[in-house]
Amino acid sequence: MNRSLHRLGRKYLNKKKFDTPFKKWNIKKGDTVQVIGPLSGKDIGKTGVVKAVLRKKNRVIVEGLNLRRRNIRASDEIAGGVHSVESPIHVSHVSMVCPETGQLTGVQRRWLEDGTKVRVAKVSGALIPEPEWERKSPRPEGGFSDTAPEAVLRKTFEEVTLENGSLLFHLEEERNENIPHRLKSRKST
Image (cartoon, rainbow, N blue to C red; front, side, top):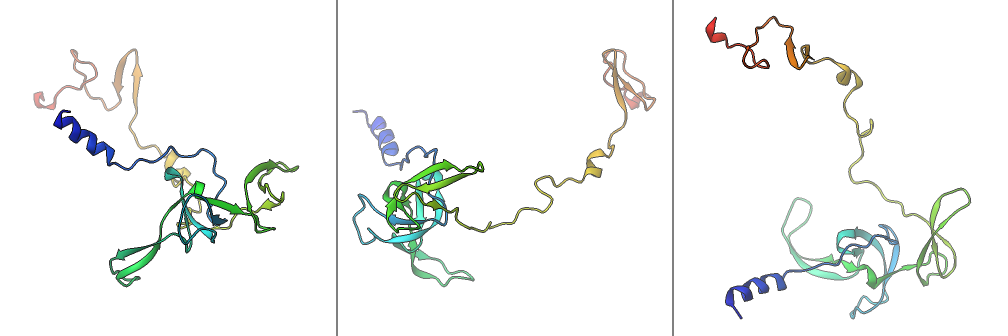
């Protein structure tokens, strides 16, 4: 095998690859989940609250589970040293916990009579409430449009109109006959 191709292949083989993101997500930030599945370790069977959802990587971070030791630099809020930090877990390795029975359950979506879409536990048929969470950065009070209506309607240009394919300047400036869209140079005057 050619050495240059081998080097190129090794470069791409060692690169970490992620699956395509799921389109439908039943687990949200603030839900109670239990670690299940092919993972082996001390966290199987433990329950916790979802701290963050990483949709692009198909992973969730659960409070107090899947802890790893990390070296952290000192800052104003945190003392430096070795700390335990939660690591992401793949979504297929966690399962929702039914709020009524406490058993592992799947999640369905159903429409109520008033037209709202809700999550329902498959085991007991109980409604799973939407978790409460606070936005990190508050939205502006005026909404997304921050430009005042007076500023939008204010006229900030001089009148230049297009008539018969040529520009008309209302500032009494002379146009060049060869190039009608340019003014005559001021050097000649």
